[in-house]
Length: 120
Image (cartoon, rainbow, N blue to C red):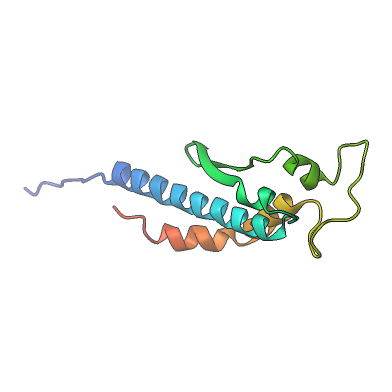
């Protein structure tokens, strides 16, 4: 009589896939930050230099600009004043949102690239 043995490797695969997807999200957040820095208005460099990404919880990243006028520049004003002339040609409001939209469009490829590393 033969004996059948089932080896369940799903928990190891789940852990591996989780780590790989987390790496893909980290890469995406860094790509957004790089693109946003190139699109952010530049006068003395403060807005572009003081920014970072960090993990807020598993599979989640936060991109932050630490200059107090970053929000003002991102939204093109504060309701009272509207920014019309940006200090750098080619920059405008929504530098962070537009960068996020561009990276989100190519995120499927990033997940696929990292997903190939998931092993049992």
